[in-house]
Image 1 (cartoon, rainbow, N blue to C red):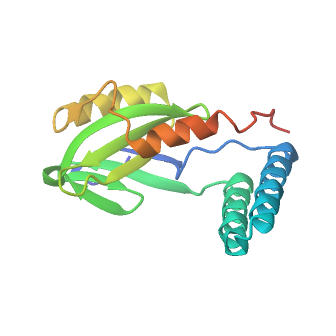
Image 2: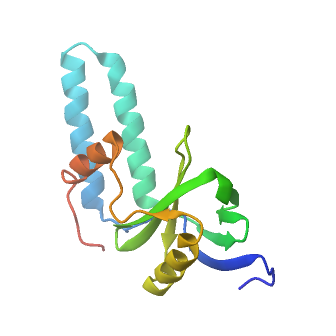
Length: 166
């Protein structure tokens, strides 16, 4: 814990939820990208092959690279997430999710921007303490309304095979 009296709660956690994957998932990404590239090539849209392989590279990097550990803090002025300060006045509500066995805290800013700040919560005790503190400043949503992007990601995540860690 910090010596700073303005820090109400702090924790260290990975920057994003991460699950170590085997080579099976990389082969899956390559197979899908080769299939899409062949389809684009034969339909004459050769320029679309570049973004397909850029996405494959992004998926590959995010799959094999574990995220760094960051410091998150709740202060009397707001949240400090990985070095970025979010003041209470600019925040609207928060909710929790779960991904790869990690609890994730999502804090949403006020209109007109509706920024989302995502933080990994390392333990259930931390989740309870964070809920207690944030509920005094922000509205808690048990079931957040899903945006179009969230719905598309949920639909696509069903297609990705789940493998055992090696």
